[in-house]
Length: 272
Image (tube, rainbow, N blue to C red):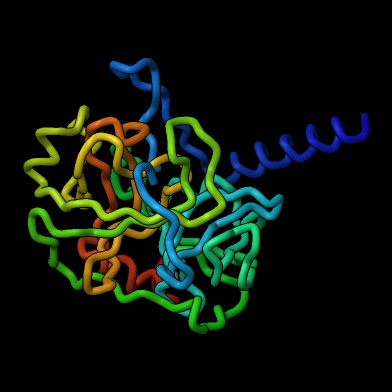
């Protein structure tokens, strides 16, 4: 009885705290495989070798749940998706320096976040946020920041881009604990527009990848990094049709939001 009561209290606290940060919950949309919602989610990948993505972090709840992926871009800043901030920051921690988030190299509490004021206005647009750690992140061989794509830059059609994450390897499956990696191909915006099921969810602030059915992101990869062959962060996992079922995956474009990112990492940068 005490165990059941404790779980009920934790769920109630988390739900109440979530309302305090203005959680926006998306309604499910019809899909030809049933009723699913657009997910931000690696399917068809392989285990990443140790140290493969030293910039990758797991954003976890203080209750021990993997919530989202993120990227170290400075010693106190993590770049991620805005929808990953449904958890209030006081219930979040950052795990670095490990391919297994249950065996962290280091952990950092969170003392703030900056979410784009245009997030979900309209739906699925401006899905970008920054998390600030309470203490500086200590760099070593397994923990390093990643450089950001330059303003106005874009990959070329067919360029190889690498996605990493701890998301499910199948629709509605459990998250994996070993970091996965997969090489995907960049597709031009016009091609992406012709392939996504709802063009209204796509904006000029997005970029897309697509290789083939059975390869892509899945639940739990949200907020994670998409990196080019020069080890430059070009995208942030935003949304897609769950999971790897033959549609493009959609990412927030780092190059498009570079000015916003740089401003938010200063005292002058205010966000919602």
